[in-house]
Image (cartoon, rainbow, N blue to C red; front, side, top):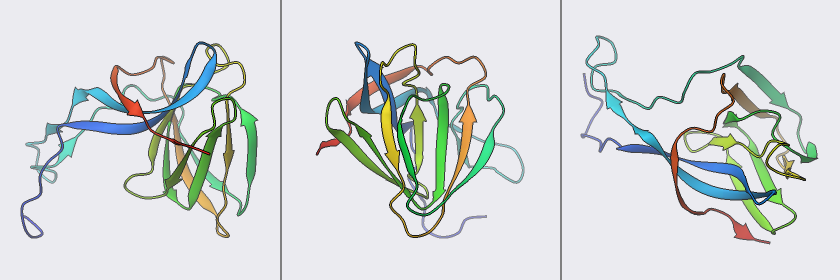
Length: 156
């Protein structure tokens, strides 16, 4: 059953990525190599799914209003799906910054772990309301296959 006009299905998932090059964190836009696949199963017939990889122990995070996460590395290669609120992620060494709003475009991947980035990134949550996120570490700790589309962020 359809809920209106046909929608264009995406071919590949793109995400904001916090990664690292030469020991310095960077913010990029990635296209994951695994394509969307359209389901033929009952209940989700015609729905497009992108495989994100084997997940580790996922968690649900409720972040207080105006929280300052400070400078840190990603604790693991992980997806973070911001469901509500917003986050501002900054790389002090480069001046790159990106604002992530909760909702359909709130998925990022954090991969600037201490073994690839000396200082990491800074995260702050400017909203006067709680920010809610689902954190999904990748079980194997490997960065998913991807193509770097561009440097995502604006310089401050």
